Length: 396
Image 1 (cartoon, rainbow, N blue to C red):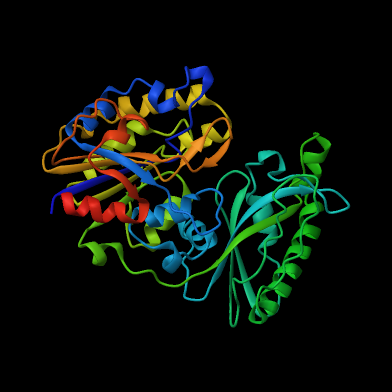
Image 2: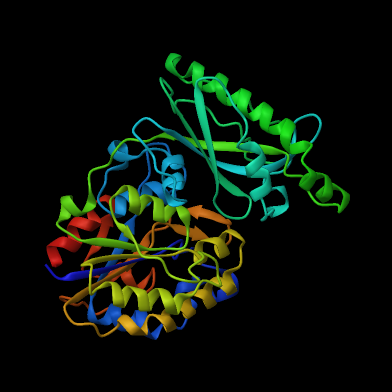
């Protein structure tokens, strides 16, 4: 088996944009290196994974599908992946949730879901760590900016609970409710924890200072995506790889860790548009000395599209193309480039557009440009995301 570099450019594909002459940011971008890989490889389109009735694809389930793990069987809920990504060691049965510091008014209506995108939250987290609720241990850890992770440890707890986050400003925060009888204790304990947290946060000196400066007070915890940890079969044992992950975002590190991939840390790998792409690609090349499957995740195209910034998305794709030169002419290495899902600039959200994929290493078709429309004519044809890994393995 040859070595594989598996590059996921988050939210890479898009819809056609009138201001770009009805092209997508990828089509409009100057990408000589990605085009070179496409010309030397075979291409196609990927159908992103969706649960029945799901409106738009999500990053966590799409990544599981990319690695050949059927989300209907293996998906844990968003929380455990986020928790693993920030370095919390999870044990069987632990319940994890993703959390935002938010701002609520005296009527418990959400004023801002991100508390003005507050960044320095360590003192708030420290104050909350003193909260005690009988029967459950609560662990809080910062993710980045306004985000953090909450883990519940205890006996007879359940992730079958609702979110308290209404997902938009102007609406009241929701009460955590049990979805099954067994989850009543967990819902009650979490509601108690959130009430105590609100009391601490609204009186915290940092928030008093923020109010005086006219900034949003980070006075409430908005929680969502509860999931219960259980072990997932190892990616390495499943496919016979020695694998690693290079990523800036916690979610992607967490998915990789739960699948058993080793994290390779790269200085300046942030998951933001200023991420150190050159260092990430150099780390990929170096990692091939030790690993035969390297998963590289690049985040910012997704975030830029969610902001509706199609010009910066195009420029960021060009930046990726420029910095991937170190891996272009490696011998006995398959290079796969795709996305987890499309993110549409005009909709400013994930969308269900098909995703281009190229596999460079053995065989080629006549595709001259790596883009959504060009890849329609590739030999791979249209592939379900859950089947992509098996297609790659057949080629290697």
